[in-house]
Structures are given as structure tokens and as C-alpha cells.
Image (cartoon, rainbow, N blue to C red; front, side, top):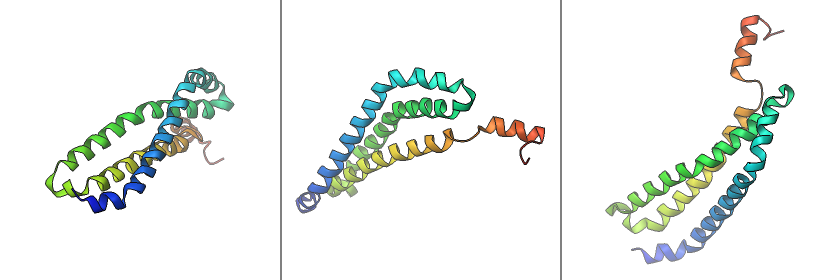
Length: 136
């Protein structure tokens, strides 16, 4: 155990954990509000001009529900890495990196939802291309 490294990184570790808890709390509130937003998203999805908003709401709620599975895999991998003799002295550093990866995956997943839910769908673009309307 490397006491000097743990003491020097204790504040960073606490800040990362606090940020992780706050972000997961916001995620939990969004999923709880998803009980209200999911029917609204389905309703918006079937109105043609508002389809992208409905798709965004539905995709965001699905991603927010599935992100803890990815976080569990990241934290399990970090705990297995800590058991290796090579990383035994760097436990706090591995855990800081693991929690930062969890935070980053949540933002990457929400950015993925944002980029995929906006604009026309691939199917509608393909249908327009077949009809020759894409470049008109």
C-alpha cells in the first residue's frame, strides 16, 4: 500500500466521487421523471414535425437506463485490475480512473443520443435518395 500516493490523491478521489454521485443522482431523477416523459416521447414520435423530439426523449431514457450496466463492467474491471500485483500500490489511481471513465461514458452516451436523434432518419434519407429527391 502506497500511503503517500493515497494521501496526495485523497482530495482528487473525493472530488471525483462527489461528481460521480451528483451525476448519478441527476440520472436517477431523469429516469424517475421518465415515467412522465416516456408517454410524451411516444406521442411526439407519431407527430411528423415533432418526430425527432420524441426519438430523442425515448433514446435518452433508454440510454440512461442502460448506462449502469456499462458502469458495473468498468468498476468490476477496475476491481480485478487492483488485485494484480503490478497495480496493488496504485489502488487509488486505478479507482479515480475508473470513476472518471464512468462519468465520461455517461456523457459520451448522451452525446451519441443527441447526434443520432436529430435530423432525418437513415431510412427516410435512403427513400428520398431512391426517389431522386435528395439533391433537389
